[in-house]
Length: 360
Image 1: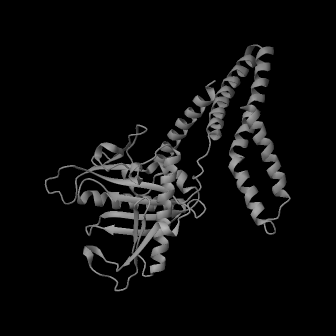
Image 2: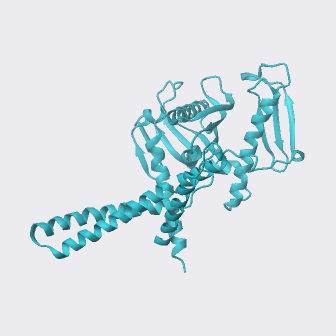
Image 3: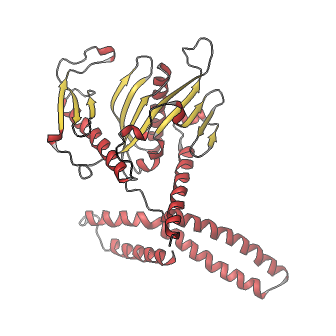
């Protein structure tokens, strides 16, 4: 591991030297390339240098421990204990930073939320989740743009699709995919009984043209008049667009814009991301599963997280983490919850890397 870290540190110094010789104006492409490469390895290099500094201090404290007695010996022993703890902490951080990065972490995302089981309450909960993620995006300084929405008419949604753009959006939201379960007394419930409902969340990395090439011969584009809630016509022109990808059967409809061209562009963006997700599933040996494999069927038993209103509790069942900050989380304060989930899956990934590297 030390050899690898030393090589990375050498590369860091070379990049620092290289970027100092570049002009951000005249060599913008090369400058950005160097700056990104530096940003990727800088946290690891800083931790490694801190780690080497701690090792040097441990050596000095050990020498002092071996050559003194009395009060100085006790002080050296205490200092050595503190330094050993710091050494272990830095080593753990370094191992995490060495875990291979997800190539999609820097991407924007397509967020899709659909009502699951539970009737009208499931739709209302789906709207609550969309509001939660929208507020979290605002807190992060990200931009969220709704691509399409199908509403229930009572404050709920059947489906909402949005794109979230910003720095490292996918890295923060990728583990939100799955079935989310709510337990509460619906506003329409006269007897005060607690109902259990679900909504499914899918977080897809936005696919660029270079990621997925779509053959025009493999898609069918239909146009129709857009309609509002209950099927009422809101447009007499054929501005709504339905795109069907013939090989996979994936269908994407868009009617939010008055322009047919804009609706087609949005539909193609969603289609490209769904096809990219399917390609990723193949690469990860999840072949022959359609996009619902990411979120399940919406059944209550498949939940990844429960939002219990009577107890003001949120439990993430994948990591056995519970917080009693339900109101704050639904208002967009997701930072602690997401950090807990991300740290858990990073640790799991680190274990897998260590198991592979330990095999003969």
